[in-house]
Each structure stands twice: as structure tokens, then as C-alpha cells.
Amino acid sequence: MVNEIDFTVENYLRAHIELQNLIVVDEIYDAIELVQSKINSGNKIITCGNGGSASTASHYVTDWQKIYNLSTGNKIHAYSLTDNIGLITAFANDLSYDEIFTGQLKSILSEGDLVIGISGSGNSMNVVNALEYANLANADTLGILGYDGGKAIKIAKKNVLIKSFDMQLVEDLHLQIGHMIMKSICNTKIIL
Image (cartoon, rainbow, N blue to C red; front, side):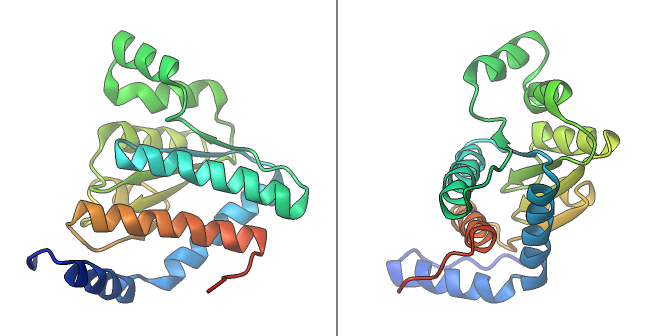
């Protein structure tokens, strides 16, 4: 059931607290463990999403690559499929917008890599298609999802679900998940 309340700054902050209490913490630990295992094995970690989730996909890779190397001196093979506008528009124009991520995966994905699909609704067909393709290619898949998880929750092998139908709250918490993964893989402190 959807519960709507009027916007105030206080209500928005209160909604964050309520949603954080609904998060299944083990899902985040599973995501951390999965990302860490791909770093340890030298596999690629590939992110994708649309709109705000595209920015989050790019943000994950930015943070993970930079901070991981600075904190450990080691490499991480992380890539965002949202960062090459030429490839995105080529696949959208020549095939279909639903194939913008799958088209890219076909040239870079290897068995054992990890594809992370970020979607507020879980119903973005290009993300769903990317997760399906990755499964067929014997890669691992992780959905970072909102709403009820949509189609993607049934396709990704592992998921972190933010149980809200408010896109802005979902996007806020998806960004926090990326930061928690970064802090864990880089062994950085929380500073208050």
C-alpha cells in the first residue's frame, strides 16, 4: 500500500529514516561481498541505469575506481555503460533504446564479470535486457532497485531493494548503497 504525505523538509528526512529501517541489511552485505569478490578475481564490474540511475551508475564507478586505487594502490576494473554517449546513441539509433546496454555488453562482457542494473522501478527494458544477457553469458548480476523491484527483481541473481514508490527517495538511497560499498571495499572510516 502506498502512503502519501505532504512534502516538508521534516517529512522528507523522516521518510528516509523509515525507509532505511526497511532495508534488508544482508542484501547490502551480499552486494559488498559480490563486488569485493570481483575485485579480488580481476573480473569487470559494469553498471547501467537510466536518468538519475544513469548518474548513479556513473557515480558508483567514479567513487570505486578513484577511492579504491587511492586507498589500496590496486586496480579495480569498473565501467559504466552510461558514460559513452556515442555508443549509447549508436545503439539507440541503429537498433533500439532497449538495446543500448546489451549492445555494449556484447563487446566487453566476459564470463564471471558482474553487471549491476540500477533502476528505480525495475522495469527499464534496457536494464532488464542487460541483466538477462549477463545471466546468459554466465556473468553475475545485481539489481539495485526501488518500488516493488519490477521485472528486474526476478532476473538479477542478487538484489538490493528500496521499498518505496517515491523515485527521489529511491534514488537517494541507491546513491547511499554505492557509498557503503565504496567504504567497505576501500576500508575507509565514517567521519562525523
